[in-house]
Length: 164
Image (cartoon, rainbow, N blue to C red; front, side, top):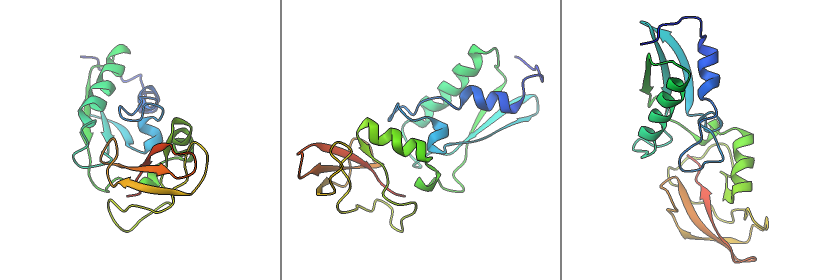
């Protein structure tokens, strides 16, 4: 067990901030706003993360990646805490994350906040051709946090990361 206090919490934060989201690998847990903070308490680095959904299946993988990344840097005294309050919101997505999503082919949330969980927007901009002439195929896409759309102009099917 490493108890070297010479590694700052900022350095630990920086070591893990670029861990990719398992479901959208072009964005990081920092980009998503899931990485809340790193503290040092009782000889342990305590990493606090917030899931995008309460039952997000990627959380165990993210926790394992955090521990593995820190282990690679000889930091083994790590605890990962999940916090559900405040609840994650798409407001926490960085603008950089939204741009990375577009480039990856996923339409990011259309506005910063929404009032209904699992709300489905009309006329989402196609990340391929930029047309807003789109229609909903399914309220759920490749994951629960996305809806499936079709562009009526270029005919491409794409995911929309739902606002919540």
